[in-house]
Length: 495
Ligand SMILES: Cc1ncc(COP(=O)(O)O)c(C=O)c1O
Image 1 (spheres, rainbow, N blue to C red):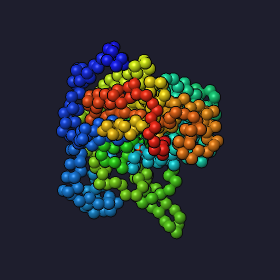
Image 2 (cartoon, rainbow, N blue to C red):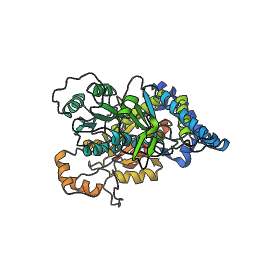
Image 3 (spheres, rainbow, N blue to C red):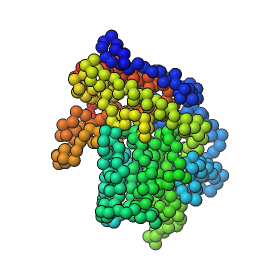
Image 4 (cartoon, helix red, strand yellow):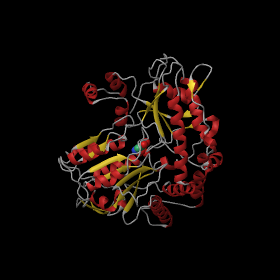
C-alpha cells in the first residue's frame, strides 16, 4: 500500500497491460482501434455490455452491402426474392446451432424478438398444473420471473430458491430441496430423467446483477428430478462458451444484440425438440399453422420451429445474426472471455481496495469479490466517508457527464436486489400491504437508503483503458467526498 498526500490509502496501480495474460489478448485492442473506433468518439467509455453488446463496423457494412446488392421479401411467399430471404433465414438458423454446438436432430432454433420473447414462448405454452410446478432462483431477470404468472394461472406451485452468503450465490442443497418439495415430495431420491415435463426449473447461467455464474451442472440435476430446464443465457453467452453438446437444457433464451451489438430485435429460443413437442401454444398466428378453418373453428399447428414463430420474421436482420456469429467466432469467445476476466479481476481488486482517509471503504460490492465463478458484471454502491450511501441516481448523472455509459438501478432483477440490500420477507410484506404504486414509494416504506446499485460490465471490445478510466473517475469523484448533496434527483421509474 502507498499513502498519497491527502492520506488516502491507495494500492499501487499494477498496470493490467504489462501482464503476459493481457498481451495474449491484444488482438482485441487492434480491433478496437479499427472496427470499434466509434466507441471512443468524444472520449466516451462504454461499460454497459450486460445491457447491450457493441457492433463492429464490419457488421454494419455487411448489412448495408447485402441489402443494396439483392432483393429480399416476405419468406412466406413463393417467389425468388422470398426464397432468397427464406434461405438466408435457414442458413442463420444453422449458424446458431453450429455456434452453440447443438445437434440439429436434438435442438430447434426459434427466432424471437429478444430473450424475453423466448421466455414468454415457454411460459405461455408450458403445461403447468398442480403437480407441475415452477421452480426458479431469486436471481432471475424479470423476463423469467414473469413466467410465474402463467404458472399461477394454471394453479401450479411456484417455489423460489434463495440467494445466500456474501457472494449472493445459490446453495445446491437449496436447489435440490426446492425441486423435491415443489411437487409435494419431501424426500427426493432423484429418479432418472424419463420424459421430463413434470415441472420447469428456470435460472440464469450468469446473473445480470452480480455476475455470479450459477453451475451448469444444475441442468442435469433438475432433469434427473424430472424437470424441464429453462437456462437464461442472455448475460452468459456474450463472453462465455455455451456448448449444448455438453450441457443440454430443454430451453435456452438469449438476445443477439447482447452478443455482438447488432442487430437488435432478434433473439432465440433454442429448444430440445422433445421438450418443444410438449408445449401447447395458447394461440396461433400467421406462419404458425399448417391448416386452419374459420367456419370449422379448427387449426393444425406447424410441427416444427415455425409453429412458434409468429407472423413474418425479421428477415432483413436475421441474416446479420449469422454474420455476427461468424464475427464473434473469428475473434474467439475464449479470447473475449480471457480479456473480460482479466479486466474484471483487476477492477474488483482495485475498486474494493479504495479507502476514504478515515479508513472506511469507498465501495460496497454486491456479489463475488474475486474472479472465481463469475462473469464481467460488477455491481456496487459508493459510500461517503461517514458510511452513508451515494445515491445511485447521482452516480448516473455524474458518470454520464464524465462520458461513461454504465447502468444504475436494480437491473430488472428484483430478487438479487432484495438479497443485496438485505430486504427480508417481513419487511416486504409490510411494504406490499401498503400497495405502493412506484418503486420509490416501495423503497420509502422499506426505509431503505437505496433500491439501486451501480453496474459496470465488460464485453468483447473492452480494453484496459476503459477499466482504468473508470477507476480514476471513482477515485477523483467519490473518495473523501462528504454527502449527501442537495441535488434534486429524478424519481426512479422502473425496476
Ligand atoms: C439475464 C438476462 N435475462 C434476460 C434478459 C432480457 O433480455 P431482453 O431485454 O433482450 O429480452 C436480460 C436483459 O438484460 C438479461 O440480462
